[in-house]
Amino acid sequence: MQKTVLITGGAGFIGSALVRYYLNSTAHSVVNVDKLTYAANSENLPREPDLSRYHFYQQDISDSVAMLSIIKQHRPDVVFNLAAESHVDRSIANYKAFVESNVLGTLNLLDVCQQYLQTSNPLDFKFIQVSTDEVYGDILQGEFAESDAFNPSSPYSASKAAADHFINAWVRTYDFPAIVTHCSNNFGAGQHAEKLIPKIINRALQGEPIPIYGDGQQVRDWLYVDDHVLALNLVWKRGVIGSRYNIGGSNELSNIDLTHKICHILDERCAKLGIERQVKHFADLVTFVSDRPGHDIRYAVNCNKIKNELGWRPFFSFDSALASTVGWYVSKIK
Ligand SMILES: NC(=O)c1ccc[n+]([C@@H]2O[C@H](COP(=O)([O-])OP(=O)(O)OC[C@H]3O[C@@H](n4cnc5c(N)ncnc54)[C@H](O)[C@@H]3O)[C@@H](O)[C@H]2O)c1
Image (cartoon, rainbow, N blue to C red; front, side, top):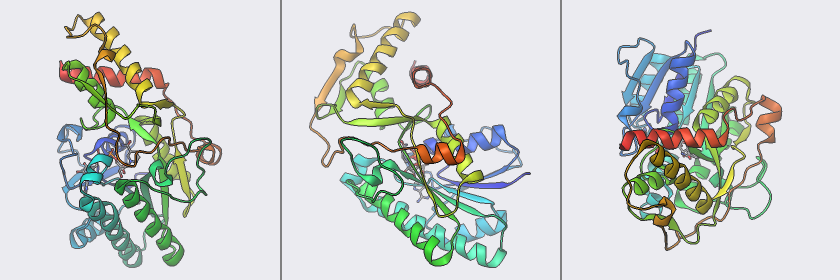
């Protein structure tokens, strides 16, 4: 049955992958609401501006009048909230935009959706909040389960945790039909150049130092963005209201090991394509720089719940997804 899917932050990295999934693989209508901050990429948006089941609004999710009007006009069956300031380093330099978009913006959406529920009484409406594994803080051994408490370290993760607490309060106090997901680090095509994987590739191909924080031993789990999209769709279809679901790729790597892996892929690809480079091995460009303040040592989430209850599994192999991701960035730079 054709549904209406409202995605906030749909011009960003993950949101745009979700927009493309619903437009290319389903018959659903898609409403994309994005403020178009520096992090948005118009190349991520669908090429068919006249597609009748696609609607784009350049809009701040904190604007209650505009958001209520969009929601009442389109009557979504689901709202996926991905709009956020997403870069940890920027949150350390200036937290304000993070509070405005991630906390107050989410609260405004909750308020507006609650008004929509009360006045329009839509059937089976769900609000899916795309949060992060970073809300749990770091863990040296083992994995965080959904029942674990939050212990965020950065202004970014604190803002995401604050929004998650408000959602929990809305579920408990107003029976609001929300679900929260906690994903690990996403990778894939179309990510902003400030993020680790595009930064490694761009710096390497330009023959510039590849900066790695501290000793590079911080461990992250990597989730391919298209696997994340499939997980989010399952959370909408089968997820239990009031629940939290961890989503990870089971691909734990230290930052330095990931960097070496990417440099190795680039070495091979450049040799094969005859691309000139300034160093014999791109890994020679790695430069250790002062560690990020409050840098979490390791993130790890246990994903048994989404696997056992919703039947989700990562579909793509990490090595082939990473190779095709590297290939995508190389093709953009060449
Ligand atoms: N990328 C990751 O690895 C990762 C990991 C865990 C969680 N997340 C979460 O997933 C979501 C999407 O992440 P991403 O990497 O695609 O981010 P992104 O920075 O690439 O995109 C965010 C998008 O949100 C828009 N936006 C920001 N503030 C807005 C506002 N007030 N109103 C409307 N639009 C606004 C931006 O213009 C941008 O297009 C975020 O909520 C982030 O916290 C991301």
